Length: 291
Image 1 (cartoon, rainbow, N blue to C red):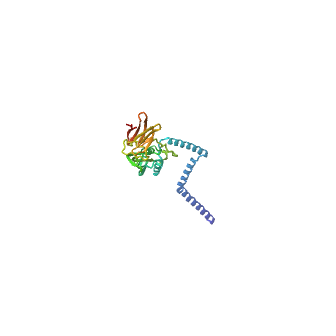
Image 2: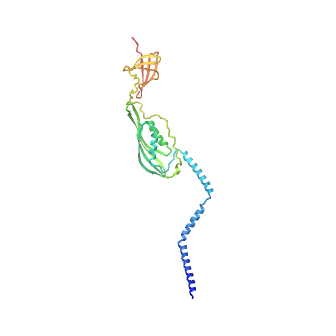
Image 3: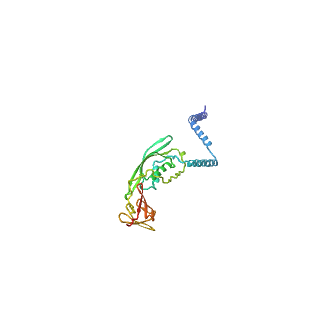
């Protein structure tokens, strides 16, 4: 066998070795990778859409989202997604922004817990204030768009006297509030709009009917207790109090603890209605007749 033939057989053998080695590598080692890439390519081919078709699908989904948001917005209450525990503090501060300085509220975070598929923040509110302002706070919590519920509450009377000695009849309160939220956005619309939280004044059920505290006469009005009727004139009546001060008063005029209700020129008398801590008293003064 000549040298040329040996070289030819050697090259053929080397070529066969390369082919066998390459085949083993491709079919044994790369087969899984090729299959994976083929599946990925088929998936991409299956999910490839025409831009016009994508735009139409987007418009349809956007319309459907707007309809769902409208339905959620029309509900009285929503459960927000991933609610911050600080938001309730801001909510209460906004409600208190128009209250008088006599209403004070303290907020304490109690705990966070889970209620089935929802999460709950619980807070403890304590403080005092005027009845109607406390009522507005309760109304705002219960009627807020984001679901809030008062789970317990205690109330009591409180009388506080200001620097001028005028009593203020307040309400002590302590209540626990739960705030609901979810980790799912399907319970609330994208844009949050608060409910109307305005309220009208209501009757103060805690205001005492009879009170020991009588407000002082800081406006120096006529005190008709043991006062004397001096004279009647067409413009009104002259009345003197126990300190010798003389006042000209007419029907409807305010006096200390009440009003002048009637001037009777025929009977030479005047009538007053006084409110003494819830006790209504009528006082009549007559001209003294000369003997």
